[in-house]
Amino acid sequence: MPEDADASPAASAGASAAASAAATGRHHLVTALAANGASAVVKLAAFFVTGASVLLSEGLHSVADCGNQAALLLGHRRSSASPSALHPLGRGRARYLWAFLVAVVVFGGSAVGSFIEATHRLLNPGHHPHVGVTLAALAFAAVIEGVSFGSLVRAANAGRRPGERWYGFISRSRDPDFPVLLIEDVSDLVGLAVALIGTVLGELTGAAVLDAVASYLIAGLLAANAVFLAREMSSLVLGEAPDDAVAEAVLTAVAADDEPWRASTVQAVHLGPDELLIIVGLSPGPDRGPECAGDESLDGLRRAGRRAAGAAPMRARVLFEIDPPPPPRAQEPS
Image 1 (cartoon, rainbow, N blue to C red):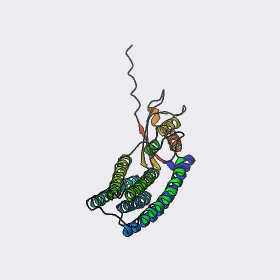
Image 2: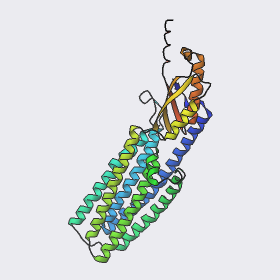
Image 3: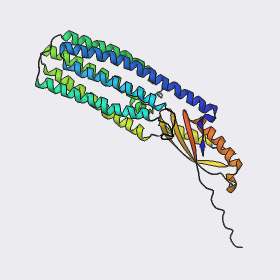
């Protein structure tokens, strides 16, 4: 028996909170897209002036980030489509799918491009003029991406538990926006540091091969991003359960001494970052028998469904799986 999550004020509040979180995620994606777009233009323009391999690798890195944000924004749009006959539970997981494709295609492709460029420079080493242009472009990108990273960390801290490590926060999150953006920004700053160090050391020592070495390291960083994000996003595409606290809250909300049913199990899975499918297993309560199929039972199920939807921290679709009452015992012959 399905119970509409919108039937309770608490569930409506959860849906409003989920819509607000989605709007916040879109804002951060647009901001990151603008920052990475500016960074990509500066790096690639400087590459055409200097021919420095690290600038091309870092430019591809920023292009990959831009593709990532564009794909995640497309995922937001796709996931907001209304349920249809083909997709009766909606398309909330579209955000996970696009994040997974970004990890494999965009980051993976950029890693391959950086690796090819590094190999070319290794086989054809040469001193690049205009080192000052290279350093200025990398420093400009570091300022832009550092400001973006600081803003993102402040926003993400609001969702972190006290004392929670960043890896735990990323693994726990069911919203792909913050984890993906955090991984991106950290890798951006690390990649810029590698590029700056490689450029400075190459200039000081005269070893042109250091440019190719730095590009190899950036390619490895992009490949590591692709593997990590693909693993995290594929798990979300397959469907992850919410925190254990959600199941406990739903189980507590459904249980009530005056109801004819007793909640025995709760199974929940994310249909998207801000929507849950909750299946509650019910069995007849103490001293309850076949009369549980009457109007009293239906009223009890409606009340339990509203409480279950209200206990979820986001929009929820609640289904009940009802165990039939045990057959009456046969009387022993006297």
